[in-house]
Amino acid sequence: MSDQTIEIDIRDAVATIWLNRPEVRNALNETMIAELDDAFRHLGESDEVRVIVLTGRGRAFCAGGDLQWMQRMATYSASENEADAMRLAAMLHRINCCPKPTIARVHGAAFAGGMGLSAACDIVVASRTAEFCLSEVKVGLVPATISPYVLQALGVRAARRYMLSAESISADEAHRIGFVHEVREPADIDNAINDLTKSLRMGGPAAIAVSKDLIAKVASRQIDSALIEDTARMIASVRASAEGREGVDAFLGKRKAAWNTL
Image: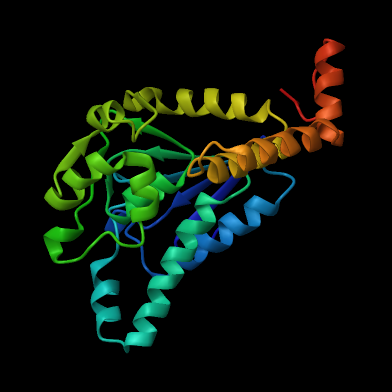
């Protein structure tokens, strides 16, 4: 599958989305935003896809927003400008809420919106040469639409430094502060991705989708009787589901579950 600004390759139930504007370091514009939103919607609904990997062609993951696009948007009416910004916000929300596990495979620059794309994914694997930056204030802008995901992934304390200073963050430092899950040498990054996709494909598809929803709902809630009851109802429902029964039967029978084709 190929679009104007992205390419999609599906192999062994793993969909890889390639940002494909290498001449501008995969900078986001309105076309790429629309195509990413459509791709994550389609792949999130596809029974053929178990894992989604987001990465970039060329020497960068994503250098942020295309400044020519932003300059053009600034000349539009307030309502048109806001509608355009909402499309970016909706696309990031689509990635964040995708029912399939998502991995950002980051090399080179992941600046501004590129850091937002990484933050919206479930897992970030970075090449040791990767570089992260919340660079917006340097050009008089703010990281508004990416902030919900960056704050969750980076933490408030670190965000207060890097959103204001716009300092570059090395892959090793991003790993140390918890934004990146794993750092690999450039030649080894695909081995890490392959190991992760294999692990993710061993889980029940429905269980993974419910687990993602569980994390989102529980993370900001107080541990009280309502939360305890909600989680008890959830596990009771999952245990009685077809996938839950199959998983337990497979484990007890010392066989692979039906969804595990590895």
